[in-house]
Image (cartoon, helix red, strand yellow):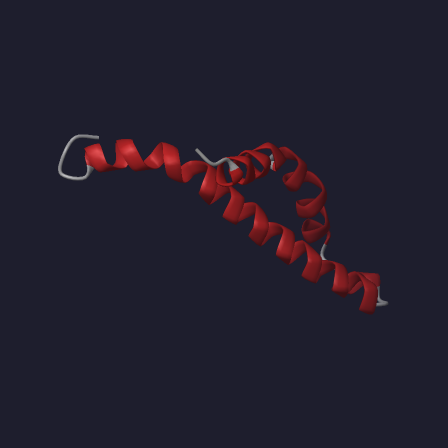
Length: 78
């Protein structure tokens, strides 16, 4: 990563990683909550896509540690 932006990225990337993961997980949780409304209101199960169900039950637990790390880093003060 040499070049004009290399040093900047080497400094900022470690600080941005937990924040980006936290934002990604917050977005996933929000989409999951919207999907829960669909499960409640839709009575025909053929209309519910199984990939959306798997995403909330499989992906969120795998990345939960990044979520906790991002919140912890944001909450710790000097």
